[in-house]
Image (cartoon, rainbow, N blue to C red; front, side):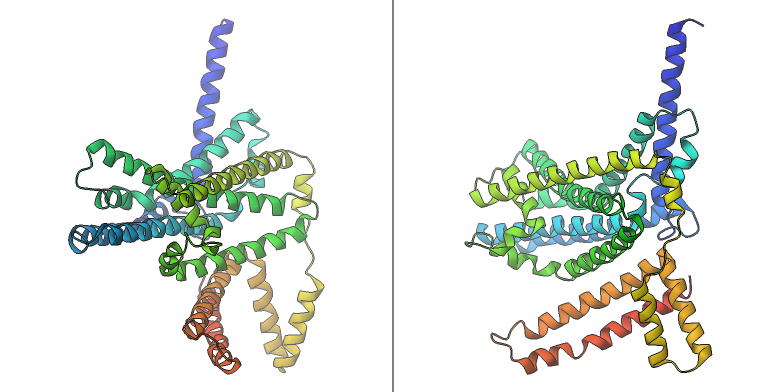
Length: 411
């Protein structure tokens, strides 16, 4: 064989390796104990797509009736206000949904030790390995962003367009919708990658690993709270043009500004929000790129595997709290043993921790929403009114924690 044939064969082999690796990494996103406990990735993919496309389909159906029947002959100002509200709602929902997906794939966002332990001894170039992982990550982002916004992207730009708009204008509106919602989802996804990378790739790995788990729970709590407050977004949009409006600090409204700017709206408020949106997207992309390169180099270090297998000790504060609670509330020794067994097995399982944290996050978010709703319409709430609004909170939290405990005992 001559040198040209050898070079072509090597190039073909690298291309074949690349395709096999990115397909493997993409399947690893679906082969997740949290979303695919039985390892059936194809069935899991169908289930996820079904869940993600249903809200978009329902929104498209409601938008069709809303703009072609109920708002067909309304004044332009009312129609524009409804359009802004729906555009902001779709952007916010897409960001929240992508945030939930990033939390579910928290450990798979960065290069994993198991993949590198298996693949690095093989004759695979590092560039091919890194490129395949990044390709799988971007494909995951594109695939699920498209699933979330498939039906709204086809209906909303068409329903909100003027009757005199041409086909090219309509296609441009659809493209603007896809770009605006897509970059909003990308910002959330890259921000989660950056945060996760910063928390697990610095000295003191095991202590920061606990911080990473806490950050995962806090992000989950924030997203659930944002989901409950989603109907209030229209009120924030109305205050955008007020001086020193706090609504300008809401990320969904940054990308609403980008949406309006791309549609040709020359309002300086929207232009400012669009600039903020692009800056935030650039920072999140740069941060995720840096932590990815650092994580890749860290995984190739010969000392990484030894650090991974070090068993972290239980924090003294956690052990003291467990002992204090068991002795304070439980007198029977057998019940104390059961209490410690349940606590330790629950806290050592990532799947059980995340499920219980999800129920706790729903309870906290629901408590916050009900408390705010109780005092919202009171101009000057008294201490007694605030205390009265807070009374149901412990019962709500206890209910969701008990439901969560009951669920994790079945898995």
